[in-house]
Image (cartoon, rainbow, N blue to C red; front, side, top):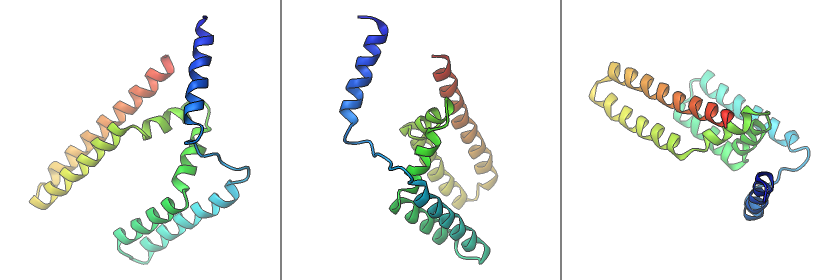
Length: 145
């Protein structure tokens, strides 16, 4: 069996396994999702412009985005960009990135309450640099492969 045939067999098995789990987007879904994204951005802008609490604004935008699957649509649209799009989607879905970022936020909150604001800024900058390094390394390794 050639290498190409093995790869094709793997892809067919993978597709058959995920057939029921992958949402299929209908033709013309952008006509619904684009106004939803405009509404999310408009609500976020209005909340910030009129001095609404940031937590309420963020919760509203998050709730609207989750209920309407706007975030899923955005990632799917981002995944259609040739070469780099699928890699960005893969990286955003990596549990390690989510875990490191969540731990960073929790430690930041604790440190801010104790009065270490300057240290938090330095530490968060290093964390963001580390996460960006992981993402860039993953993308370069995937392109080289």
